[in-house]
Image 1: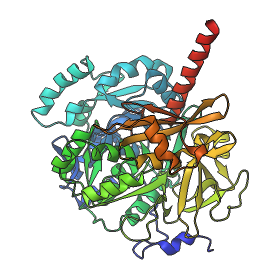
Image 2: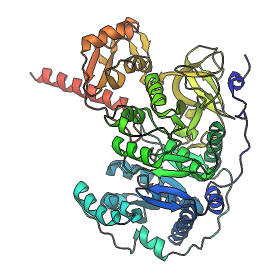
Image 3: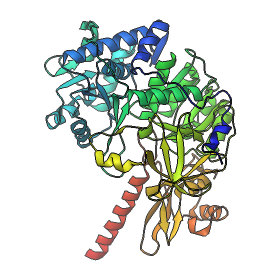
Image 4: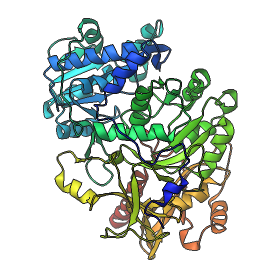
Length: 567
């Protein structure tokens, strides 16, 4: 076996190693604005923004930040959905020398306070409807200034007039912010600021972004991603998508920019290559279908639940999805049935990729056009990326086919966790980043995930991997979505429970599913419990929250025990 057996699987169009420019990330916007000044960079709810306008707005925003006192290395937070202001702020912060802190607009006051305090952000830009929430927590953070914008700020007439009334009806509030003191209006910044930037010198290892992890095993950690990390991963993405044409693609921006996958594959990749972004601020399946039909995106990075929802929408047949050439699915495992059906509907390719926030995010993926495709695999490492399977406490890779922890190396791997040296040291072993995912590699260098280390179920001494059971359930014709989790069991320690969402008009019983699973799984893997639900809890990018279901189950059991004790 060669040291990197996957390299022999590479199609000739993909180089095994790349050259990466030693430039700051924002230079890509400068270049594209010169090369494609009048080309549409952003399409947003009927409004088009050219690369030239995008660039000029980013420089104005950067100039204003510097006037507010933002210096090199200062953190500036963005708490916005996908909209032009979010893109402008992202590059504006980088031009000013700042570090971007992406923040989920759905964060509660507690979550927001923690992130702002941990990052030490000095400035935040947010939606007007979020202003009251930020105002309440400002005193407990380092925030000195709040920049406020609204969806209407980039809407064409008459949408910009109508939208505030819709917003008031939906959210029950109408927020007015005056442009003075610590409060600043984005529209006023764009009107009154002249781009007069103070030049900032950049080093290749400067941090561009603090991207906070989900915090499933403790408080969220700020992942330090440098300009070089993000540039290298975007260049790898470009090499992987070798059939795309510079300046000619349209990328569907459904994945939020506050998630690293949406940020790299849409916001950075589009700017780097002069592509057009179609941004969707609030995701729903009907809107997505309409936008695909009308705007004709050729690239559509997404998550499995997004593709599942589109495929199962009752109006799917009314819309034309044939413009889609390629999709790389991330954030969760891609069921094979979903891949095959999506490719049939669109005529394009849908492949599974793999990565983490700490890898900017993509580390491995399946080949989109040419190259061997293996059922159930997450693919092979990207150019300049190394991967192996490590056993507990060892730095020696395990033999082919043995299950251990997936570990990766590459120029896209983070420098560390913000102000957490102990956590950083724990995440690496002799230069390998430990992903926390269990998997194995086959003889051709293709990798397979069996599950997260923390999601593995141990029932009566057996190791059970939820992903394997989910793959079987997804092939059942009545099931739209599912997730499997280990729930407490007094006899087995843990037992297997499946949470099921059925397709519209479909019905199935627990007995039916038990019979179905027993034909395809060993008896100890077959779910002992089923729960049918209308929906499943998800993150903003559609990743199903397994942990919250487990916590829900524990709470139920505690309440039952308390009731029994009191009676």
